[in-house]
Image (cartoon, rainbow, N blue to C red):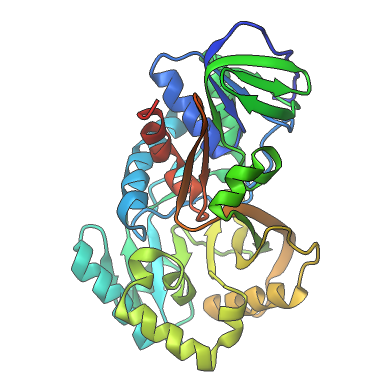
Length: 374
């Protein structure tokens, strides 16, 4: 994927700017509709939020449009995993309740969604699925429709699969400007009938007025990779802090009660905007996260205190004497009011971004909705 191809003067039906999961989702859908497609990216491969995540398609905890996009994306992930050759596991999610307010939130969601989508668990039912500590465990829920995606391989495998189907790629090619029918790059011009700009948090670098109007900021995450020999965590694992993040749970009375409690008892979790969750990589290491900080231009410093907070929460959750950190990284995604940005820029040019940190969950369902407007 690191090869560099010179742009062609021959117009295509669609140029996609950005080869992360949002851009690739548009390329997948456009190609399926019989459109000629070219993708251009400034890097030699995707290295942004699309590979720095949990690999978690968190479908059930969404609401409204995001839930509809997530359901549509679910089927696309299963198909692409089989066809493009990367792992997609129908492993579901276990949400752990370690406070009465957390269990109440899960009970409310189960009453709304029904037992097929949200299966309530007692303490032993939780521990039969994930190796959490029994101390203080009230129970939990199993969300069977959620997926785990092999996130460090998926976008690269999709790009290679698309290239094999005739989609053109221009890697290591910075985009300098877009206008109707034209994408200007550092290697020449690309001509297209339609252009979709999917550059995530870097929208303000290319289309600053669009980013300003949307109130776009950068959300900076801190995440860890832990080596815990013998750990087996097949489903994704969410905690009470996740209930304050995901809308299907955060709107419950239980979650509101939990937030009130934590303002007094656990303010450090709220200050760091923690979503303590984890997934397991194919090699057995655990991906643990995450904290959130928001700014148009984030500070370059990383707070060790927040990493230690994540480590302490993980040790307590899994009852670990120790856990060795083998990698640390910073993820960045676009944040703005609402969950999705879909902004007409000029005739035939649309900017698209997932502004809520759920790109892996929703992008493959979002893209068809965008293309339907063309």
